[in-house]
Image (cartoon, rainbow over all chains, first blue to last red; front, side):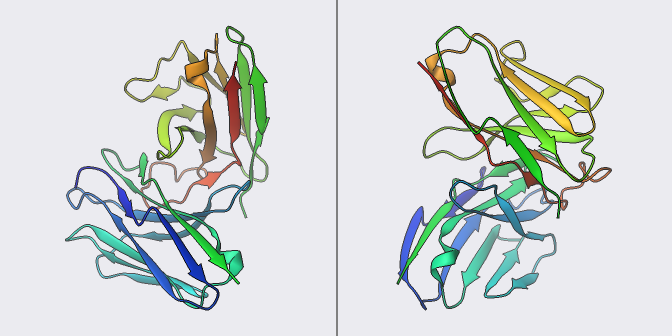
Length: 112
Length: 120
């Protein structure tokens, strides 16, 4: 993996469903993995910044795991709500510690 | 929390004109700000790193004379798209890190809401 990649590109779930999506990143020279939520017409907002292999972070119904050896992170949303509808971006510094390389995002739509 | 504003949110201009976009950190001092560009269905691409009181650092392939960056104060960075052309039409977004932490990979970035530029 040379770039940061996310899948799926988009996802449509019903309210109450649990869902997850993937971020793949270069496993060599790993610094950190960032997850952001970006609602339409708003600013991207940081959800998690993860640095340790095996790390798991949680914020309410949203959680994330990290595998730095194989170069992937999963974001989980339990019991999706319409307000969870957003684009979820992951990013990892590639090259230098301060410069983030972003994936194209997973666009989540939660309907009633 | 740390808030970043960006102005304007949307601008339409004629080809050949210059457009200035402002990025402000409202409740903290940002010695480092980042400018990104996003084309449709693509990821945010870092254009340049803006450092207060010094020259910006541009990413490979980004013309510094085309995209002028000025970071004259600890709360304001501006991006000027000079002699804009239709191919410059894009979504431009800035971010900032808390002071002293910009070089740290685990430091989250605080984003503005972005500017949609359309060049006719």
